[in-house]
Amino acid sequence: MNLNEKIAAFEEMVQKIKAREPQNVEKQHEAGKLTAGERIDMLFDKGTFVETGMFAQHQYHDFDLERNHLYRDRPYRDGVITGFGKINDRLAYAFAQDFTTMGGSVGFTHSKKICETICAARKNKAPIIGLIDSAGARIQEGSGAYASIFYENILTSGVVPQISVIMGICAGGGVCSSALTDFIFMVEGTSSMFVASPAVLKEVTGEKITSEELGGAEVHSTISGVCDFVAKNDEDCIEMVKKLLTYLPSSFLKEPPWIDTEDSPDRSSPELLEIVPVDSRTSFDMRKIISFIVDNNDFFEVKNNFASNIITGFARLGGYSVGICANQPLTYAGTINCNASDKAAKFYRTCDCYNIPIITLVDVPGYMPGISEEYKGIIRHGAKMLYGYTEASVPKITCIIRKAYGGSYAAMGCKAMGADIVFAWPTTEIATMGAESAVNVLYKKELEKSEDKSALFRQRVQEYREKFSTPFYYASRLDVDVIIDPRETRKQLITALENTKDKKVKKIEKKHGNIPL
Image (cartoon, rainbow, N blue to C red):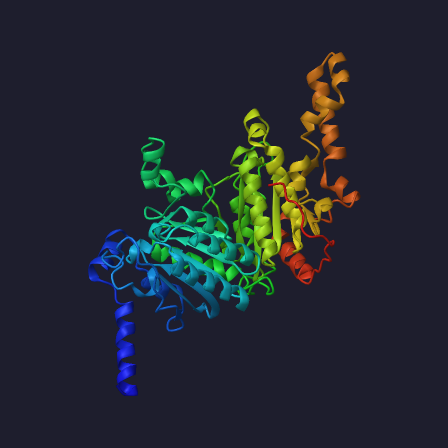
């Protein structure tokens, strides 16, 4: 066989490897899913993807694998496509599990391909995206295939962005690997994540439940908080992944990309004057504040249906990528509970990993009181938020929109917690607690003796507000840096970003801190 013949044979072999049996492709499409190859083609810029490990095969022969139609001829790729290419003209690595080959099950060759891809992404300082569609561990090959993936996930954490995209089943060890990454996407109706499948639950506990009820996108985006983003279908999901990458740097050594959004940094927002009610006990939608502040009203929210009393997400201000954490008065009056603490703490730390400035918009009346939250461990969970904010060394800018009370304000980024610049609207109220509660404590005896308790109470509340709760009082103590016209919030935040973008922090020498997990 001459060289041309060998090349022709090679090309034919590659085409056979890439070809999928029509009935298997049809099954994927009928289930509302793309194939692994279609997902890779959609994720990467056209013609840039380079596949690695195409000729990999499993090395096991027990349990009649040779006679099993799923394993016959030891299929190439071993159920996973791996490689690298360009996404929006930037280098990225990916693996896509192929459910049409052995159910995308994870054996040792399959695992090694994923590990080598994660390792290459770490070494070459580029994001790694996992497109996950797998029945779980390949039991014919024994235990241990997932452990190597966990190891690589952990070594890579904080070095480059790791994104898990659940596009089918993710079970057993697969869920632990995904949980170790920075972001998790799921797809409505086709994604599911669980440690033990419905069949296992029925066998072990007698419980009967569907995959969707146990670990579907709605469950993990609203109840467990495992999922960060939910897409309508595979195509929508991949576009969302691409959008997320525009806010992130390639690695911790880089800054997030600056993009000219053509939205003037000097733009005023008179609409902000109409959003916040005069009565501090009346709720409003903080998303409206965010929308008018950020470039082109474009806010990419993270975990938007979980712990909705706090809002987290990415946006641009003057073209700069920023992470925004804000209280949401529409839910529990914006108080901070256990789930909100976990959500915000993870977001703070993720922004810090990848050099994304943190902006907090504050309207917080306190940590959520109650027996339920105390029993859940609000003390421990609340401390995570404090730790995450203080540990972050990126630029940190705070803007108090309405209320900033006590320890909950500390969790949102007060001056004493390391905020670089603290802005406040002139109508804000800053205090240890609300004026009414403070007066009941401070003037308890005087109120008990008064003939007109109601009138005295109102008088003391007004005095307390005017003397101890105004932003001017806290500005006199240097706890507030600048009191701003609400209409100029966007302009002031962008100026602060530009002034802090070269911030450098010398960290205290130690092995690592001990976050209250």
